[in-house]
Image 1 (cartoon, rainbow, N blue to C red):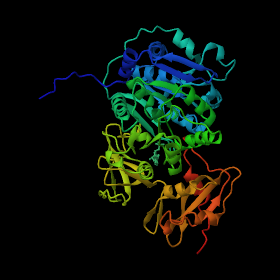
Image 2 (cartoon, rainbow, N blue to C red; image 1 turned 180 degrees about the vertical axis):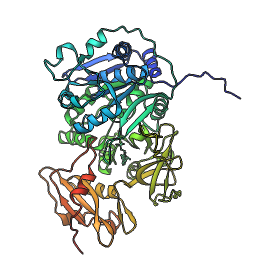
Image 3 (cartoon, rainbow, N blue to C red; image 1 turned 45 degrees about the horizontal axis):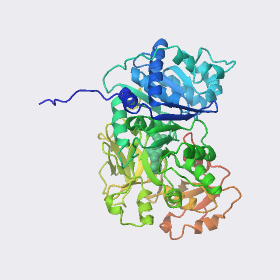
Length: 542
Ligand code: AMP
């Protein structure tokens, strides 16, 4: 028997319509690349998105056309999120931190037809424009007064002129919810970039899930400041989630240093933010150096790479801020799990609670996860056994963009390339990556644990643990360390620091000190580069 409920497709435009009708006066604040602060309300954003939808039509953007953006977090980018997807076209957020060669490759692979850009990125675009095969129009996301006096870019249009020239009467079309809405390429830490094409349905379901209390826990009383870039997995869904719940949105633009972020958090009374650990390191250093306090910030979402326990303690113990440590991937929209506590954790002391929160957490309904051995057999959830982490769900990738032949799925599950354990309560803990892993004598060594211990040493700024070839054990861990400015620690002191904190056989065999640990475009340590650099490092024979 068929259900008798209304058949309304889940479309990105419905979020915008809802925000306009029910939260029309809620503010959206942006620090602009032009240097000032811009403020308006959701109802203004919705009206301008409709102008933009008409403008896209004038640029021959049709359903299915791919529209690229090279932009910071800001209100114009938000308008594009809604206008492009709302018309049935595909929003492709390019990561400006990629190498220009990679950017050109990605824009060509995606077949971007129109490219919207923040002025900051004009030089990059000028350098790659001759290689862009499909882009017909470039749109500078600024007003007439700030348009570049001259540029080698062909066909440059001014964003505000486009919006001004078009009417705000526009009916968002209704179409199949499985239509593509946005496209994001994986960060490329390993291998070539691969495109992940999200649908309206996957985006809306992810948005419902993300807003739940045990995840981003967002409501109309929140002030959301997305530090995670809108070019990195749709800022973990925050533009959509904030619109769904009617939260105030605050965009930091290009100013992501500790001082600028702190000032914006305070001035706009931000209650919730999300970002990768490297950003928080800079923010916490600024706050601690100047003896500052957070007066409004209640919760911080940390993910993208493991949240070091020292950072967790600093937020929770030092500032009374609730950390939501989450795990996800570009391929999973990204949110899959978060380490929020259950009722039974209430009686624990803070140290025990932080131990739970340091894990990557339990799944969000909609996603399922398990760990398997190399033959694909399920492994026990005992909190000890590590295996390959696989996930599935309606916002998990089925196939990569333009790759219809090879499905990455194994028995219907997506292999994440992460290695994890799961405890009896369902809390998953990443112990390593199979794509970036240390296996010694047939046993996993948790490089993340080794890095966390090193990073809790007062002289250590950043530490990466990599496997280097060893004649007996196949691989042994080598610790690569970047010290804090003006601080030092010796190899032997650092190795002694591990005593009692980990299984003895996990202790790194050697330490090398480097000026800078290389970081990828999303702030993650480029261990592949370090592995290449230290492949022939001679470990001391003990
Ligand atoms: P990306 O697609 O660039 O977001 O990278 C996803 C990968 O980042 C995952 O497969 C993990 O290896 C890593 N990652 C994301 N979140 C975490 C986390 N909380 N802890 C450890 N690794 C993480």
